[in-house]
Length: 344
Image 1: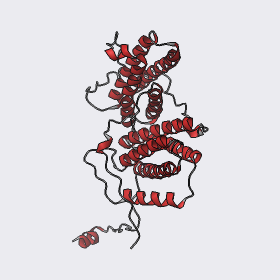
Image 2 (image 1 turned 90 degrees about the vertical axis):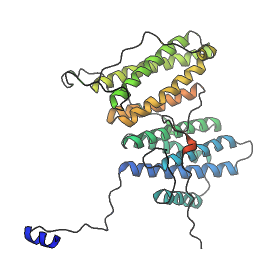
Image 3 (image 1 turned 135 degrees about the vertical axis):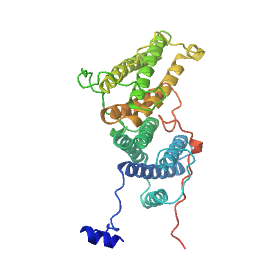
């Protein structure tokens, strides 16, 4: 029937070249590269822990192994979600096998080279997060932030130079500009429960309003050893608020007004510095949402904002999750596939 149709219409059917594999999406390539790096670094950290003297930083290396294991497990999942996911064969198993073979074939790593690799992987993940699809971008930003901060902690503990890659770039939001001509006269207001760039920006503005208020009140109660850091971070939040409002206006959305004040729980009175850490932790999902739901300049700003918020969290002693910016239970992640054996 097809042959008759072709003959009658004069069309020529060109068979598809079955030898040409389909193009792999950028997000998938970035995810697999991130997983391979996590596995390689995990093996390197495990080797360093096994060969270290009992009092030579084994706990720190053990923490690095645990962190990188969680990252590899999260990166197994193509869509970045952890619901009902199971690890099986395919590309993930191949990456696991290749990574194990690669680390086994190399000379034993040093602490300095491990730090360089860890910081480099973190920065590459953050770079990829700027270009990947939403869900994967959020996951890559979380992985990159955690790896960079882990490299910084280890460099301090080991008294080694911090790798250049661990220095945050100075990504800033665009300056506020009059956009009345380019914005519609009446932009629709999104539903509060909808997941859009507008709602993510609105949540970001509100979180910065609250953070500024808490820091202002905390400054009156902190001692000299912590007040200088709080004053510095207050200035950062004031700048973040201005930038978030600028991005909101550039997105043709309404900027949420500030509240007159916020009720502070008893935990604030008991430990203002500790409470500031919890405020910073609470802002991580806001940055994560904005990474997933935005693009271009807004996405780049959110990626760097996530890293900076994670750094402020640790500065206050808050326990940073393995994947900052992601509401994810590590116990629900799939197990890593065992590398296949080529032996008989």
